[in-house]
Length: 102
Image (cartoon, rainbow, N blue to C red):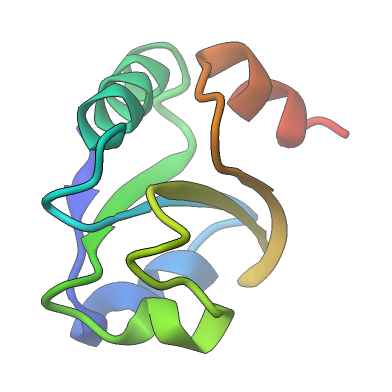
């Protein structure tokens, strides 16, 4: 299950495992549903990776990474709590999986 994050949980979440991924989105974003579907599909096949989502209209953690409404939706892969890779326009389970093995 994709964990719906808040600012209060964000740092603990991305620092809680070797790899994690967060889908940042604004509720009105055009590809929000596509991104969330990919994150949900990824969780089904890669249950050992922490996957979360963060609504940037209600939370400010995204601003620390330069993520604004104009940028999102975007998936950021974190490695040991640090941003490692990001996907903005094309979301797929395969791309997310490959990011965590390269």
